[in-house]
Image (cartoon, rainbow, N blue to C red; front, side, top):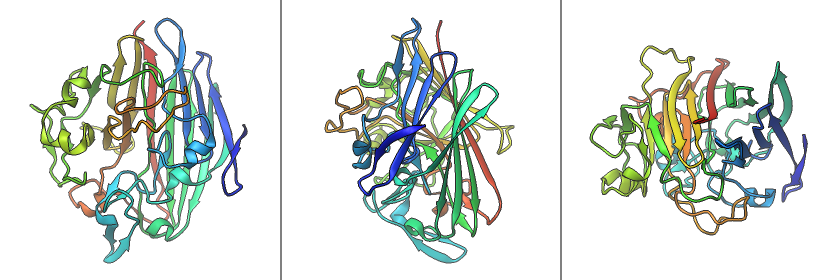
Length: 352
């Protein structure tokens, strides 16, 4: 652990570096629980950072598209910034048009977490803790949050989430890393080949709130049940692609036969020029596939290169958007003192 920087209001931010025996390196800061870089080998043994991010804390304090951050208390969107729980109405910040996004104006991505280095046999990790107060960003009930990043000798970045509510509330956490397996700043993700273990997705309205429909992907650009390039569907005139300016949709993962706490396969991403592969596994019921549609050219990344649209992709494992207002979606209600556990794994390898 070392000092990473001082926030504009005088708080110290620390950086943790996780390494394994295969030259994989993951850097995490306590501001927002942000993963600032993930360095992995290509097929020729060349190591590059495959996660989008910035060089310094000042950039992370500015407005940015949640690079590498923990999104919460509720990841994704809640319609009109409102929901009702037990007959009580709750109002949230409307920070995405008329909707609430990723926890509001100061979500978990903008707070200082307490960090502690941890280990388990040959695996190294950092455990981050945060106490979210009752009423924070409009959410009811205090919430204790523990997020642990593990780097294993099998080249897995394993993320575990543990939540304990002190009163009835809603919660939905994810990590919002953007990946480019060519290397950060090395162009678009158009030619990345994606497989998604999902036969259905949740279409949205023009504000990107789910309509409530659970629609089949068959015959649409949303079908990644067999491998295909991301670009193959990204410029199609499908109404949902137009609405989201690309892919920014929740996929309903195929989890038949799995219990809520069992890990299931989510996705495989393959980048043919480097041979890098990333597999995603989770206990969550959904994943938001996002193609960096709103990356703007005023963002200069860690490599010194400017980010543009589709220079990174996100696979955000989570419950569904707007679940507190969608009774047919898996529930995101947490009962007091009923522990909640979730696990997601990003596993890196190459094709030779």
